[in-house]
Length: 116
Length: 113
Image (cartoon, rainbow over all chains, first blue to last red; front, side, top):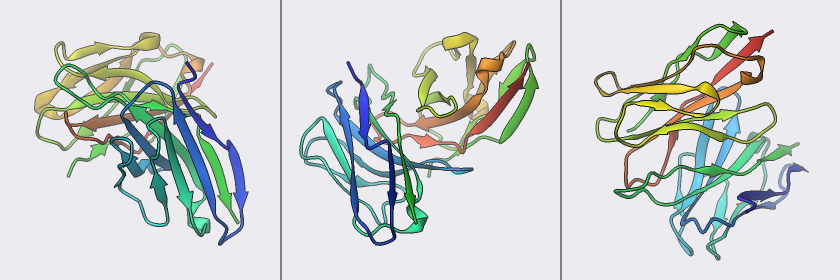
């Protein structure tokens, strides 16, 4: 199993450009998440999805959009990139929490994005 | 709202020293608790987790953590650190049947030979 994969690994954008980050998981997880990691701020949740066709806002959703057309894929879009979106982006996936199972999240390798 | 506090932002130790990293959370209900580690240039990996049962949890690489419900704490410990433990450590918490993990801001650990 590849686990959680992300493409691309690195990207440099100019202000105003758009791009899409792809996350894929092969663990049949229901839940998927997009985080950004910035120095001194830990991981902050951007958007998440509890199943195919559903998305929800996290802590810092502004400037981002997401789509979950297939269960195994979760796309993060930047319509008009800004320097404040320079960050490392991590995707994660998990099963939903239940009475007998916790919802440990499995993380991808990250995408380092620089917006000039 | 749930929050997670990691009071140690940067810890510097020599090899063989003992380690304790603090983690406190604000949620009052039943929680799941996690410690993740991020080695330089890598993604987050699960170190250990508390779901239920014994509040003393043992994880990989000799790490352990103790859940103290009365103190809302889940501190990470290791009796003798190694240079290879140099990494950033994140505590995270969620309540069962919620969709999200709340992460602390992380503790950067540097271990010198």
